[in-house]
Length: 224
Image (cartoon, rainbow, N blue to C red; front, side):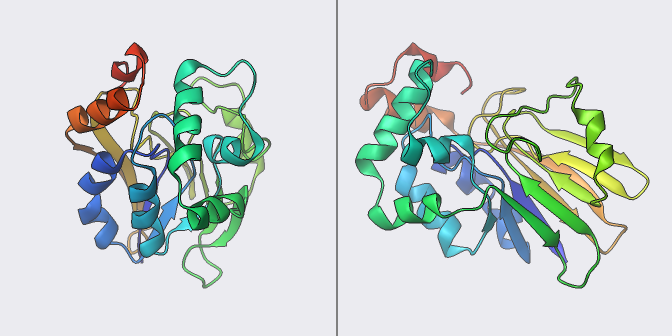
């Protein structure tokens, strides 16, 4: 089985399209949440993901759409959620609202390679951030899953010890370690399994133009 793992698309269809090759070449497609927020290709992203039968969990920005964002939310967060609220198709809104906060099971469906999927962390799927220097990161060793995959930080991370892997595929739509690359991870269980982090460049100018036209502030250029 070959699987592709995405996270934090953030309504950036240009970045998502750049990953079409790895996505089409996978038997299993996974997204760890934050389909919307920040940028403006809301329905395009959701059409793409839903047409390809992704296994998905909910991110904090997806949650903000139905529950509202915090009072101290940044202008960038407010813009993305307010924009999504205006344009999102009603069936896409319902689909986001029913996504689980976590998923646990076997990726191959054969009781091998146990996996936990979440957006932030297993303890707090919507709010936690597991950076490379997070004191919580070593605590993941308490879980017996072969793979724990999470997003949220917009920075790729892969830790492997013995047969256990801890994975953040990075962000598709707003990478923060390097601009204008769409990040993902590919899992090939024919060899142990092997996990490979990938980065594909894309044209971010299209994304920023759409957002500026919709009223985004200067923050739009920070991570593109």
